[in-house]
Length: 62
Ligand SMILES: [Zn+2]
Image (cartoon, rainbow, N blue to C red; front, top):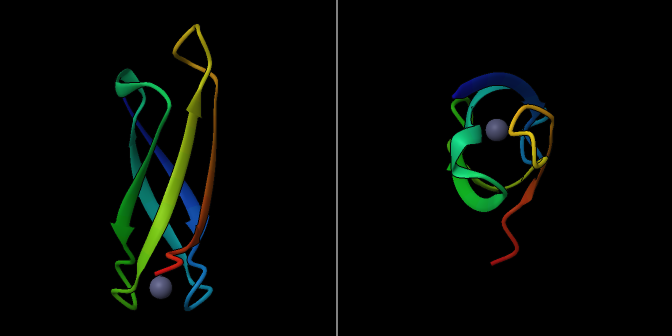
C-alpha cells in the first residue's frame, strides 16, 4: 500500500511529496529532495494495523 504525504524539506524548507510504502513497515531510509536534491533521512513508523503511520524527516547528518 502506497501512501502519499507531504513533508517539509529540512534543507530548503519547500513542501515536497513523498510516497510511503506502508506495506514495508517501520523503516528509516534516505530520500533525495525533489526540489534541492539534498538527501534527507526519512523515519517512518507504521502501526500494527498497517494503516496508521507517523513520518518525520531530518537533514542527513553525514
Ligand atoms: Zn529540499
